[in-house]
Length: 288
Image (tube, rainbow, N blue to C red; front, side, top):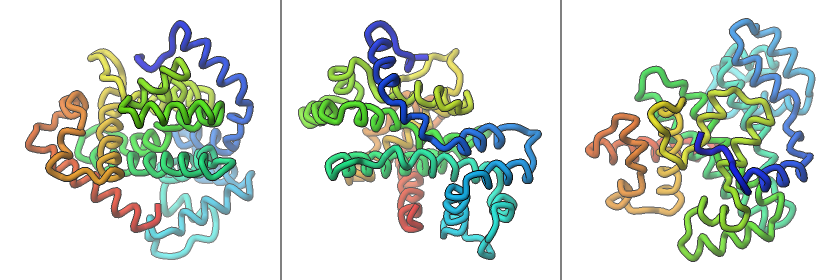
């Protein structure tokens, strides 16, 4: 796995994780939901009980289930109804969204602006990647969406570890460096490595964890190649939307290795971009 740390990076990763005890702040109910929604033996009643343990979390699940995104035929008033109407996979998505969101909150204006931008980009990536995933047989588009939500979690962990140092990263970005290059220059590791380690610590499903390395083209023998490619394409489309890149220039932003893995020809680049961009715009309209 190319996202795994090595040498000095491993030492830096251990230092960062050891000094962030609040990484365990992800609600225990999220761990349980991720586990249960991945198990065939779990029932609606089992999942309902797991969620009901945390009243605050239950309220947020109900609020999200009643949002315009799901357009339910009636307002749900119980966790049982929410599960029945939106399904296990959507409850898993909601749990990940609610659980991870708090990690993107800053203590001051500068941190908040930076992290809110990352959160918006994470949502846009997940939405675009999920839309494109539905074109491909055998892909769990919900896992791809959740991976999109998580793929920048390493950035906020690095920022929480040392906000001043992440400002140094931003200076390098302004000078033309790429994200990974700039982070490695300052921290000796990058957000992909950190995100991979954090997802492992949180006990997320293996398929989800292995999907997070969107920066490095996978070898043919590596698992989750299509998920990683979808995440890379979704991330690129999110950048196209964020930066207002003209449609004529947009295809050059897409990573060719990812498009090749997904079996898309150059003639499909623009339709893919438009599909992902449309999904992002619709999500924004629904206030997702």
